[in-house]
Length: 202
Length: 210
Image (cartoon, rainbow over all chains, first blue to last red; front, side, top):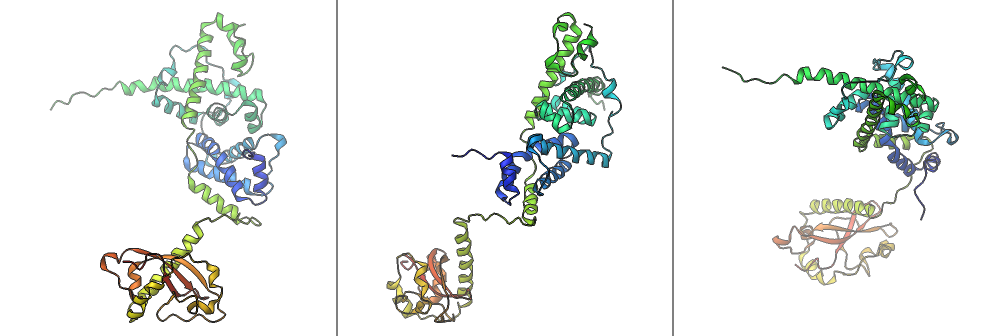
């Protein structure tokens, strides 16, 4: 009994007009692409559009995939990333701290309180998701790929078109930024949370 | 090694740090721990969202796009049982419509009731209808010509399909159907002319034992 087709085999069949091969590849890869776009944009509609565009690129004959340069999965992430960049540029949504953080940011060294204490339940995970979404794009994409989608550093490097050392560096700084954001959020939240309802005296 | 040197020794490579410094510096050790825990929680978040996928409409749109690509003919799918079922349902609707139209026609009660004994129990082989002219001739006496239906022309290609119809559809053909059985379904073979119109019918099995 033959095993399941590889991505490359499916792609060859797709370009010979095999609809079932396309369905197989789509079902195998669409969720990761959709989630990547969702984590990057925070919008299901945008994620849906980008997923559609990525696979439309696959449908087009000669979509440019070169097995020698990486996996098809990485190639699809790469298309999704480019589309996302275009979307962000068009919509000017990437207004977070994109300045010179990469050059100047240092890891936080000593923090008195631990923001992760807050991350022990679903609200904590939601806060973390928001913090990821608020990261500058270059850090957000590396966190989404390496931490959320568990793409290995080598493949992430291909997707991002950067050396693997840069991927590691960005990931480290992204985590430092996340801790910083979560700490800030933790310090601002109690001001509201400490407001307790009082009995209404009529 | 100082703190800055510790964190910059391998940019971002937490897995590759020289961890000796951590034994000397509680602050860096705490920070290192937080990074590790954050990485773990990010993976938890990723795992929690692993079920998230594109809505089904995306696949539909893409399939439509795939099919519309020049030179991309859709791969033929095996219809299995679905094709005859759809065909039979369509024919059943045609036959029923025909029966309703002819309902006002006066049947030939004597002949039809006597015809019960001619109901054939064997399965129909469509190949049997190869001689269209014989639809009401020898060998096909058990078929009942539908009222006002055209006779099958000698060289006309006919098809035979098996359908299910309400037992009440037998009434216009002269069968006596009690009220309690009127809504039962019965199997019937229908001869279709080249124009797709039903020409004759025969009821199968115990269809007439009511």
